[in-house]
Image 1 (tube, chains in turn orange, red):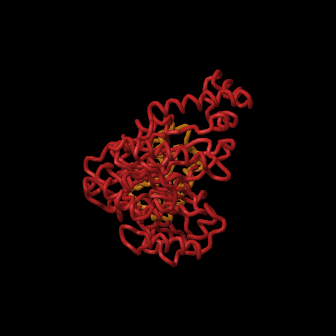
Image 2 (cartoon, chains in turn red, yellow):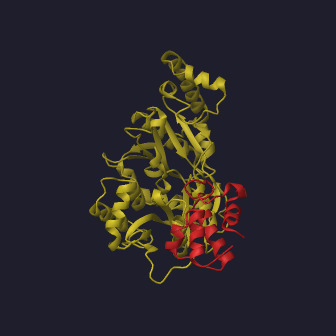
Image 3 (cartoon, one colour):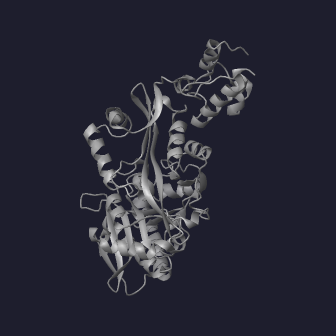
Length: 75
Length: 386
């Protein structure tokens, strides 16, 4: 499943609404609890774990994809 | 999420090494005049009144990244009385994340740490996002505290009322036109007279205070006799945070420079009831257009003594008038309050303060409905709004 699809699932968005620019600054559904849920979904789905520092920085689809790519994860 | 061994971002209990960073956080978000000394002094004063662990600082949780405080959650320790037993509990207050870091993990991590340390935690909140976080860490939402408003000077209220500024634009056009018309001084005077007279007659007929009780005003009401009152009443109030004299003196500054006034009701020389009123702010909420609202922050009385309850309310109304208040506001969860407030002419309107409770040890079994909780606007400093 792509990061975009995971984001759409966690926040109840249509896939077409999710772009690289989707972030916690422009998506009302992306609140603190949603953020934590998203991180846990990412960890579970891709088998990775994020430090608190990393979790703080994962605030947009673009940053999610970049961080996953840096870990060598493809989708 | 796991923490790296060498982490730069983490949740921690407050320690003196974070005093400067915490002060900076306070300056940014709450009080531009905060200094390390003022923050340390406030914490020391609170520690002296810690009823759960005397002398210890109130538990405060910080989210720190590279030495900078980005999130804050503190507590008010209370002794919670329920079923004849006192237990330690903590109101969660001051839950705040730096604006640049909202909608991230900070709020959740702060809460998670606090509830893993503290067995019984309580919250009064209006924010839906906070409610979602609290329920995610096993808080149970018991309901919304009803609000009650007693107009004291209806003419002044009507002349200043601006439904649109208050966000009441959903009112029907007829009501909007009527409220706009009521802002005309003559109309406001006439309508206010009708409303004021009506409420006065209603309260006189339905809410006449009992005879044989006397009223007393002032700081003395928070003295030793308040302990006797608390001791008499505490097991009839459902679930209630201890309101003995030590707590009342710490919580409510009733000095002439303070924000609160107290009054008590006595019968045969014994205190039977106590009320605490927050004076209207000199500069009120701008949305209220200058309407001066006093807050009935706290009440203590045996709910079986309806006469005492009515007397307290009547005296509180009189005290609020002396404060030049246009209205007296209260929020009260316990089922005993509603009927008395109605009899005194208080108008009920929808509340927004949600009571949430987390009890991991089953200490409060059975206290699952809002009406069993003696919670008022003074709890958790929720009366700071007005």
